Length: 232
Image (tube, rainbow, N blue to C red; front, side, top):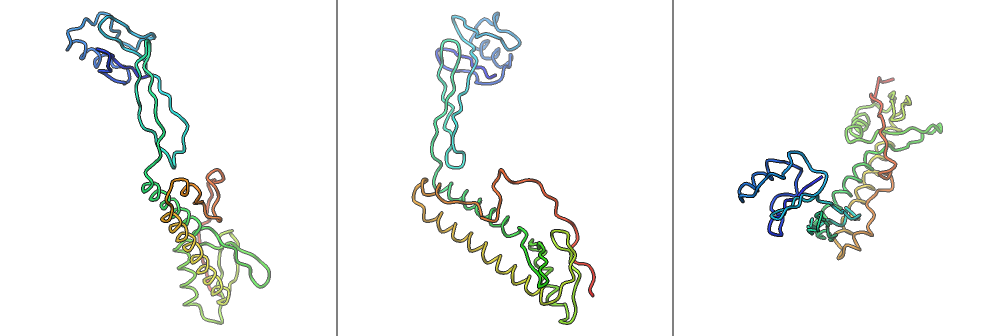
């Protein structure tokens, strides 16, 4: 609970948590008797001829935190309490654009590093690691693996698969297409954000990439360790 000391019709101390010394210092500076000032927080308002110490009640409205902000609090002194209210105001559109671009970039990165599916000629499908470091590993293997050899790979889903250079090449190309796609998505969102003239237009821009789950669907997951082992 917050309290406010009212003197001459205005708030002079607080709103703040109860602190006997803070209220005492003000009252003694005004040569006001502190006989009725309790050491601990009172259960009822303190009303004297010279001052009041009243509880403060806050009313916070529901608002869209992405596009709006609260202005205030604004205090209204009532007989036995102080009310604290807020106004809902729109965020500055340029600040919103910057925030939305940050959200878009985060979505692009999550999509960029989400696992991809690759199907071998024998019909088996595996999930691919897609972090930037792992994509580099695929490329290094492609550049160093002789045409006639294969490599044993542990994939994102934990499967082990003897993988030919042809398949490694296809995996590298799949990764390139994926990266091109997610960055093109990010670019298109940036252009839409820059072109928006009103907050309503910004609200209409979806910032969740189709490959990503919504916030409500996000759960902790464990990515298995290990990448490539051995050459056959």
